[in-house]
Amino acid sequence: MTLDNPWALIIAPFVAILALVRRPTPNHILTPFSSLLQSIPPSFRLRCRSPILAGGCGIATLLLSLAATRPFAVIDQIEPHEARTIILAIDISRSMEAIDFESPIGTISRFAGVTQVVSSFLERRHTDRIGLVVFGASAFVQSPVTQDHGLIAQLVKGLRVGIAGDGTALGDGLGVSVKRALEVPARSRAVVLLTDGVNTAGSVSPQKASEVARDLGVTVHTIGIGGTRIAQGMQGAEFDEGLLQRVAHTTGGTYSNASSVEQLEAVYDRIEALELSRDDGQRELLVEEYYPLCITAALVLYVGVVLSARTLFLRIP
Image 1 (spheres, helix red, strand yellow):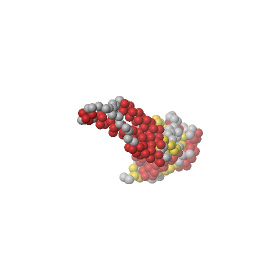
Image 2 (cartoon, one colour; image 1 turned 90 degrees about the vertical axis):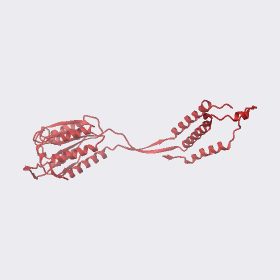
Image 3 (cartoon, helix red, strand yellow; image 1 turned 180 degrees about the vertical axis):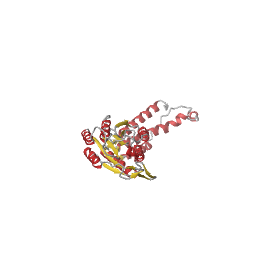
Image 4 (tube, one colour; image 1 turned 60 degrees about the vertical axis):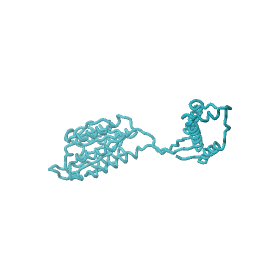
C-alpha cells in the first residue's frame, strides 16, 4: 500500500494533543451531601465510559487522518479469460506395443511411455478443458471435453493397444479431434496429435483435416515417436515425419519427435509453455483506493460513539 499524502498523518497526534490540553469545565450539582456521593463507588459501566468513548474518538480520528493520506495499492493482474480447450489425440494401433522406448527404469513399450507422460501432463492442467480421442484403423472419442482431469487420466491408463484396429487413420483422428475442440466456447483451441506410424487407413486426408483445423482456428501440435529398432521380433514402425510437419505448419502448431520418456516429457512441456504464452491474457495495472473505506469506517465509529454516549454510557451531571 502506498500513501499519496503521508504528511497528513500528523493530523491524528495534533488532535490528540488538543484534546489533552483542552480542559472542559465540569458541571456540578450544588448539594450538601457531596461527601456522601463521593463515597459511592462508580459502576462498571461508568468506569468503562471514558476509555471506550475516548478510544472510539481516537480511532475515528486516526482513520480520518489515514484517509487524508489517500492510501492506494497498485495491483498487477491478468485479464480473466475463458479456459483453453486441448484435445489429446493418441495413436493406439498395434505398432504402439513395440518395446523400444527408453525410460529411467529401462526399455518399455511406446504405449507405456506415452501413458506415463500424458498422465503427468494432465496433473499440471488445472483450469483447461481437455478431451481424449484415440485412433487406429478408426477414430473415436474416449472422453468429451471436460475439466475432470482425474477422469481422463483414468481413461488413459485404461486404454489398450489395438482396440481401434491395426491401421493408422491420422486424418480421421485429427478430424474427430477438431470437431470435439469446437464443442465448447474457448479463446484457445489446440489438438496434440501423437502417432508412431504413417497414415494407412481412414477416409479423411490428414492434410485436408489440417486445413479445416486452420480455417476453424484450431492449432495442431504433432508428435512422432519410435524408430526403426527391432523390438521383440517386431519391426518398429516409421512415422511420416514430413506429413506431421506439414500438418503442424498448416495450423501454426509445432512438430516434435521423441524416442524416450525424457524426450517426450520435454515435448509436452514445450507445448504446455507455448499454449500458456499464446493465451496468458492481457496484463493490466489496477489502482485500488482505500480512502473511501477509511472514511466510512470513521463515520460509522463516530456515530457509534455519539449514540453510546447518549444511551448506554449516558451520564447525568
